[in-house]
Image (tube, rainbow, N blue to C red; front, side, top):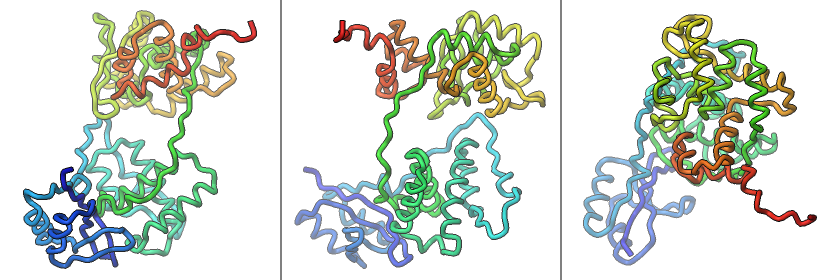
Length: 374
C-alpha cells in the first residue's frame, strides 16, 4: 500500500495550521516526528504544524520520494465560471435593511463576483449566509467553530427547512471560511443531511399540449413550447439568442449551460413555425426573449408566471413549474423508445445516473408488470 498524507487546513487557537492526516506506519510516523513545531490535536485527531511557507516546504522536502503528499484539499481553487449573464452584486451593497441587521462582509461579495457565480447562486448564498451571521449577530465570525455551525443547522432542522436549503446553508457558510478566508476544509467534518431521492413530477402529453394551447400570445406559446420540446432549463431558455435557433438542422444550441458546457438539443417543427411568427412580430435585438427594454433578457419570474398560469388555464390541479416541462420532455422521450444515452446528451447531464431517474416514472417501465388481480 502506497504511503500518503493528506494536508488539511485547521484553525487552532485562532491560528492557521496545516493538518497532517494519514494512516500510521513506522516510516511515515518517523518522518512526521522530525517536522519542526509539530503538535497533536485531540479535537481533529491528527498532527499539525503552524501554517507557514517554511513548514510547508519542510513537509514536501521531508516526505519527498517516500510518502505521497495529497494537497487536493489544501490547494483547492475552483476555476472561474464563464457565465453568459451579467454578474450583478451592486444592489446588495445599496439595498435598504433594518437597523442592527448584520450584512454580508464586502470580501464575500467581491469573491462571488470574481468567481463569476450566477446571479441566482449569489442571491442564495447571500441570503443563507446573512441568516447565519444574524443568528450570531454579536459574535466574531473567526471565533465560531463546528459546534456553533451544528447548533445553527439544528435550528434549521427544527424550523423544518428542507434538506436542500440546509445543504445550501452549509455551502454558503463554507464559502466564507474556505474560499473568502482561504481555509479550505476548515469545517470538513460538518455533517450534511441525507440526500432526498424524490421522483420528478411529470405531466402527460395531453396536459402539455393543453398548456401550449391555453397560452395568451405567441411569445408565451413559444416559451412553453421550447421548454418542453427542447428540454431546456429556465436559465438556458433566457440565455438563448436568435442565432441559437438552427432551422435548417432543426437544432437549438445551448451555450455555457450548467457546468459551463455547450450542447445541442432538438427543435420541434411546430415550435419553429411559432418562433418565426414571434420573430416577425417582436424583432428581438440581443436575446430571443426580451423584457420591456429592448436588448435586455426576459426575467425568470415572468417565465415562471407564464408556465404557472398556462397550467392553471389547462385545468392542471398541481402547480406547474418550468422544470416540470423539462422532466416531461425526458420522460416522454423514454416512453417513446429513445435511448437513455441520447436523452442524457439532450439534457446535458454529465452522467447517465442522473438521467436514469426517469426510468422510475416512465410508463413503459411498468408495461410488462403482471396485474396480480387479473
